[in-house]
Image (cartoon, rainbow, N blue to C red; front, top):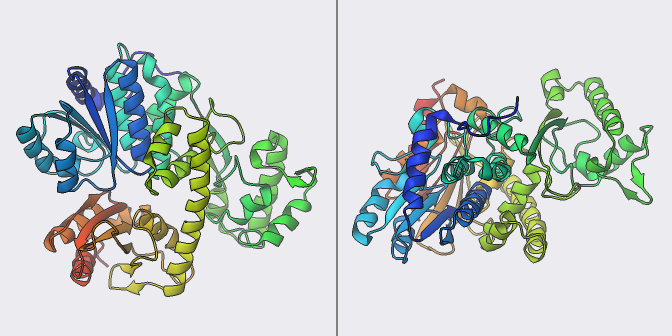
Length: 478
């Protein structure tokens, strides 16, 4: 059923969204402050587009982490209202203190664990009992604000596409599918032909990777003789009764007709069963993909997963302006630069993962950890840590904690922690662990139950790990 054009997609958050929208509409100028990951960039893109449509002058700034110094810098700008997107809930006390001193109105639209302090204009799914790690992303929350900014919300519904990219980029999909409030936003986007949820091969790169590379690098579900083997993937494809080449070049998954796709999927399923892959893992080969219907087929922007990776490749390399421009519709110079940054990003991720596998991790009672120092950028060490779980020699049954140097602060160290949905179901809450352990050593931390981060003073890493290990041990009793 198509979404009602006027019904609010997440009724539990309707009043909060409307309150925040009233505060924004009352502003002469708005500063949008956003995080630098894909969810933050899409949040900024949604906010900037909505403000432009309703005629409110605005500026956008980005921050790696919303620490006291960053909040002070934001407060010192000449704007009467600051809209914090995809962060801010964990720093409410500092934000409200600066708001009182510097005379600006704070509006916080976030999905991370809120601090105890309150602020008059605060939109966060956790405040209404929704899960901020799986049911609504920062971009999704910002979409609800954008919708409330419009006259009846209908003129903002195309922005659901960016909200879906943000949710997918924030790894909010449960078993490959967006749920809860995210699903309601998908439905709204589908109603205006901005998003399409399709059942397809659940593998990254379906729009852009040549078929052999698509299967070689598809390691979410390992198919013996195909995954991880360039020659094996080619031999597998060449044995099929389908013309998978375009002259001398291999076609992409996006190039294939439905019948051709079915032939490849059926062969993959047979190969998996013949080689003893568990049935539940075989089923994971097929899942839900989110297609942005306004984007050209065969481009990195067509698939929400690939789009989100492109965005991560911009802001994490100090080019948030490029990612924002892509979110705002630039398909020329900014898009070309984003693709160049994406190539660098992929290489750095590969190199970082190799470094972790080569150097290994240190296993404590309840967590495992590594310190990358300056070998992995602080802005991508969390992504690398998530990729490393389950890799050669790195267990997948305990959370992983990663340290990396902060080039802009030699006295501090960046921390990223990653868990799994299975561990969360057993009681893992990395947001609590990061916050409590970081606070105890003079730092700051927070995030989600399955993924969180912190900044801690250099030299206190061992004490921090000891505290995290103890906290996680309490959360995950034997």
